[in-house]
Every structure is written in structure tokens, then in C-alpha cells.
Image (cartoon, rainbow, N blue to C red; front, side):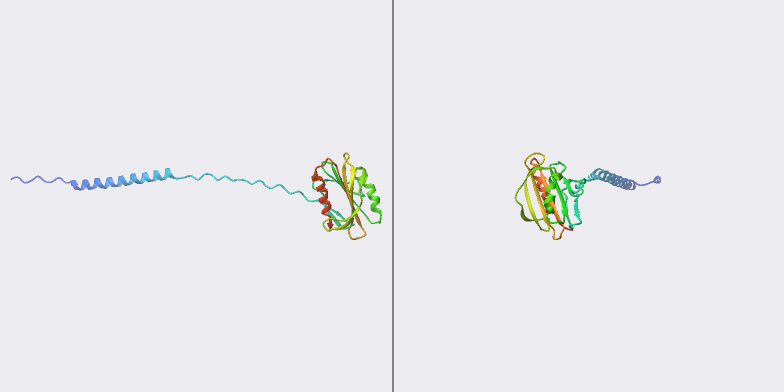
Length: 204
């Protein structure tokens, strides 16, 4: 018999099958990895911007205005927003912005001078037709100074106004006279403002 033909050189069928399996595994894994990356990119969340809420600054508190006296050595708080009138040298005068109330004060040293000053108060305050009630002892201010106090009615910005005074003994020969008036048409808070100023009277 003739000899068998020589075998052709090259990869065997088993080798080709093995290579094909490896290629499929590599390509399949790479595709899966690519899918995982795409999926991860799609599911990535973006944080919403944080809104900054600004709290408005609180309104400034009203400025306290202390009125001081050298003789006697005392001070008191002027009503907030009231205007100091500087045209009279003997008296300190404050007027409400609505002009329906006035506070005046003056100092003295001589006995009986308070009566003279009280008589001049009408022109200082701009009142007329004062009808005083009986004077009475009392205390005035934060430091509870002894005082003679009186009040009554008057014509201020119209009839039916209220007027009040106190001659205050500060413990020295120097004394101080407070007097205020409020129009009948003024709101109730106006008299409270004037009284708060008197109540703040204290030693410096």
C-alpha cells in the first residue's frame, strides 16, 4: 500500500475551539464592565444647591437720652423721639413730636422760689386757664425723692388739658421743679411717656 499523506501543519480543531471560548469570555466581560460603568454614570445623583436664607438684622433699639443737672446732681431719661427746646435758658424743655405734650424743668435754691417758677410755667409750656388742685406730699423718681406734687386742668391745644408738677427735694439746698402738660386729644400713651421720664429721675 502506498504510504499515508503527510499531515498538514496548523492549529488543531481543539485549539481553535479553546481560543474561541477565551475570546468570547474576554469580550463578554469587557461588555459587562462597560455596561456597569454606563449604569453607574446614569445613576449618579447630583446634590441640589443649598439655598442660604438671610435673617434680617434686628431693628436698632431707640437711643436713650439722659438729661443731666449739675446742681442738683441728678439725671433723668428724656422721652424717646421728643425734641429739646433750647430757646429758654432758665428751663429745660422737651416737646412731643406730635406737639400734644410738653415737659419742662428748672432748678432753684431759695425757699419759696418754687412758687415763682411755677407761676412762670404757664408761658413756658404754652398753657392757659390753669386750675390747680391741692398740693400733696409724695415721692418722685427712681431714687424716691421727697416732693410736693400737684395737678389740675388747663387749656393746652384746646380745653380739657392735663397739667402736673412736682417740687423735688434731692437732699441738698438745690431743688428741681418738674412740670408737664398733655392735651386732651393726646393718646393715653403720651401721658405714660411723660410719667416714665419723671420716674427715671435719679442721682448721678
